[in-house]
Length: 283
Image 1 (cartoon, rainbow, N blue to C red):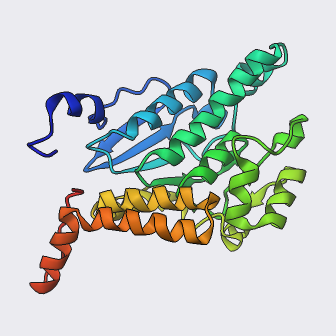
Image 2 (image 1 turned 45 degrees about the vertical axis):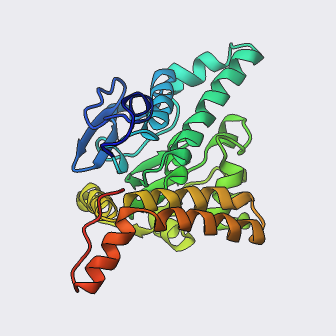
């Protein structure tokens, strides 16, 4: 943090989250990489009303974090996430009035919006079952590592709901194409790991026993890079979906000019001149 930054300004815009005390999942951070573990392995790590709300609030706060520069999301045991808990979410939803149903669907959507808006690259490490809201969280992440035995399914139509849940109809076609996304959202069928890699849903497949280590290694690699610039890249990848080409080129001109004003850009140049590898600091 800059020594000249006003303390009052810093208090409202700088947070230390490495030591965050999670209530509904596990959270551990080392050297700028946080690992978020959905931790209900006996139920294949389903989400609850409480965990949705905590995920939303945490990703909102990550926008201001000074000590977390990449996030890995994984599941305890041999599964990623089975979606919303059948007994703790699906059952109660049947009896809720429309205003409260909308409260719930907006809350789940806010999880995706906050995940997409935080500057940290988010890496999903997916093994086993990755279904419903779990598939959405993986889809919304910036990078996805999977295993051959993983099974990803957007199950909403299997329970009488539309596939347009938490941004699926906007995000999924951009990852794997309109036709393939339509197939998954209309049928709710499971997408195996090898097929998911061929379709571009997974960046690559990893052996199950190496999955978390590979995801964390990738996160550390990103953290060693220019983290301010990485955050800008994530922002522009997200914002330019709704831009025309001319608007996108102008937005990138402004974003790149900001990056050129950073000390990391200067460090990279000085390292190049000295024939050394740059050491980035995120400022």
